[in-house]
Length: 344
Length: 273
Image 1 (cartoon, rainbow over the protein chains, first blue to last red):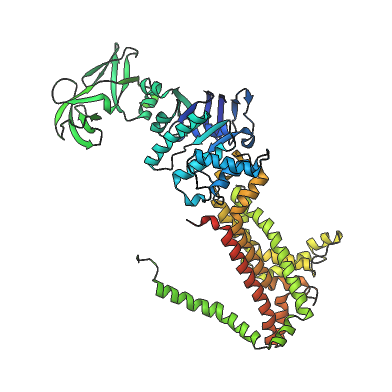
Image 2 (cartoon, rainbow over the protein chains, first blue to last red; image 1 turned 180 degrees about the horizontal axis):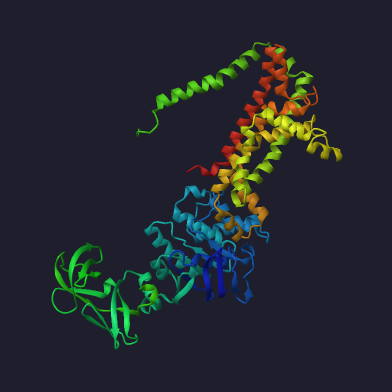
């Protein structure tokens, strides 16, 4: 089912959580709402679910205006960050809940068959008789998903679904959710503050900040063509250096970068640690090494430039570099944005 | 064993056992001893006398009615105090404890003044033909007044811990308000409700001060068991007093045992496997 948000606004008391957000989610798409806390992403998700109601604008499910339909009639599956499993029901009873309370009466046997089917789908065969307190966090989240899927929702909504889990469990569950999505083809919207999760899982990522959409696009688009300083720094580690632009060239600490689209004036240069190289000879920004942090896949070098700015760069593990060494930082790739008033 | 902050097991256990023995077990033991010093026939004659049986009847039925009333009203009160924010909420929250703090005789006198045929409530209810003071209805009102805090104070903390996401999850799965209440909220409150119910009922069985003023104390009609015990004491018939009291004791004990079993069943899901 295609979902469309048209200029949706939500205000809590005096705080405007969502400022006129318009968004389309294609049928069968897996879309991530990504943003820092307070960016309004959860509020948007809850409005799509019908757990909150918009103060302005409309939400369409297909052609139907669903803005004022309450959650129990909206036909959504909602998965909560902390699972919200019914603690006094077994796993099987949790999954069966939606079918039992439904207005559509089902045979007991039909419910039991469907529960078995869903337990198989979420790979929890044989655990139907356990209580939620008797299974692990990852298993609980899978039960929560099975419970949401049991009512054949038109759209699946997940609120920070893996936020409360260990890193390794989270990675497995992410891949597995992608498989389930591909198998069922259900329109899915999930909220996360973890950019890695969003990029790993989603067909399309919507990046939010302070209740507004900053950028939306495929993971490739938002990674390769970030449209703002916010997107660059939110999607990953980035060094920020002040620069000044004149006649299409940015000047920073002795290095020159092409900035053909920018007007003259102060600017900010964003540099990813992996886009910087280190050499003891040659050209570039002159700097000295403060510290080296070793990681499995690279060495992170913390340097200070002659003008006193700190930079971080990732160099290949075999690079020989040690503290107090002097050398040059070479820039392979950079993002330059005009400095706006609120960043100053 | 890891070192604990509080004094070790031998000391802590010793102190608590001595305390429980002196304060709880000894008086109850004396009561049973006294009752047992009657022969079985005398004992049976006293506890099954028409007047005693009438007092059990009026006590237990009033206590049941008062507890049932408190179940509904106490749960609603706890719900409102936990789920809503309104001016005066903290004041009402503090008022709930008043029946605990107030001497029960004072409560009894106040209730009698209100519900007497010429009192504020009594005169209005009298127009509708309802008599409260000096009837079992008055006993019930006194009982529910003194035992209300038990239900509110046991349910309140559990309600506070109840994750609102559970209700939202149930709604998103299509549950109606009634089915969410019956299938999700009530089962989760059940252990606390049972605890509150048993305490409320036990307190109602044993309540004395608040009731004797409003009840009228007509033998066979509005005489409660605790009062009958007191009358036997006044007559220096200690054995008969102990015998009648032992019936109350056994009833309270059985009821607590039953609620414990029910509670264990309701809490089955917390057991880890």
